[in-house]
Length: 511
Image 1 (tube, one colour):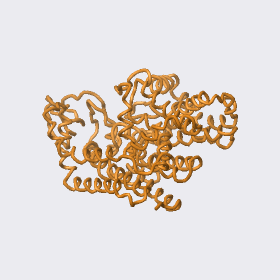
Image 2 (cartoon, helix red, strand yellow):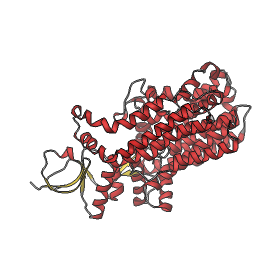
Image 3 (cartoon, one colour):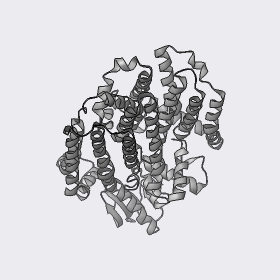
Image 4 (cartoon, helix red, strand yellow):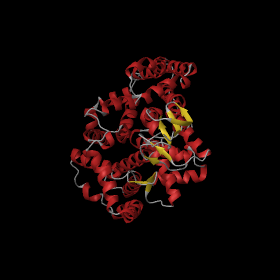
């Protein structure tokens, strides 16, 4: 028995909405990245400057400000909460899933579109990054839409409607994250021309109206940013945060040539086996125009960032969309559900690690890490273990009850991941890692504590929640200090305002 197209669509809408909209405000903003964006947005309003981004009054050239603008609009409507800061990303993720569904349906049919969207919305990395208060969800949405439109534009002659939509989406991506929004579609297009020897298309895509649309969307901010900061903007944004990321291990984010292999295996759960089996048909994929385009898209992203000096786990997500499309196609060909044991192993580890992590404390010498481990029993209770056990049971039922339609079994498997991440894990991680920072900041705000010194680490969420700036330096006697308790060894503490899970807000003694 199979579900009807209408019932599949309804189930998918509910599933995707739950995956990206549920629990947006259940965890505090995570340091450093989420808090960078939120604090940057807050300081834009304080400075009444929506061109330049500052964090703790220090100018940042990391990203263009489109995400900050959207966060500001959200905050104006819903208030300055975690929910409002993450809402733009969640809405972008819904747009991302919509692009996957619509274009896969156009090329592969409704059933493949259903499975492709399901694989994407369920993937461990996508469900996390899709609702994080970052620029990545918006970038991936525009990348997916732009590259799909590019293929539709060049498939049979030149389709001006899709070509101009490609330029519009690329312009939005360029305003969300920068040159990567142009690099990935451009390289995919050139590799596709090389594969199929269709170089005659190279000049045909240079549509004057499309280029004008791109410049009209992305150009004004780049012009204003240069006017505001001059050569510092060129050096900081283009050279430091774009070129240097590929040449060196930027900010200590390094890894070997195979760095993204385990990231892929983990990040695509619970449908890693689906994607790997689909890629096993590489000969067929390379000899089909549509599938070769998708495969070249993924391969370019994988090779580019594997060769890059700077490696961050979310870079590979730029190549997840084509993998999900290929996986969706494969699931329409499969007669049975591919292996689920990787998901079972993952769930077993998530269930047991909180209850055995204390056994490794003798090998850990980081005092802050030990403080975090000491707090694990407070948030990972017996109730958590029962919930995880129930989810493992659902996973087993989905794997072996073959009387259930494949679509529903797949939904069950994906839902286990979403519930685990959105309801059981992220709020608990937030309670351990970020709630103490938030609580200390709110206490400082409530007691009107000022002239605070932040030392040895960077918690921009402190500035966001405290709604004030701080001095970033080594503390002196008599200072009011926020930081990790372990970093204050050797200092005499006069008064402790706050202490939890290794985070403290204290006044140092004068002598």
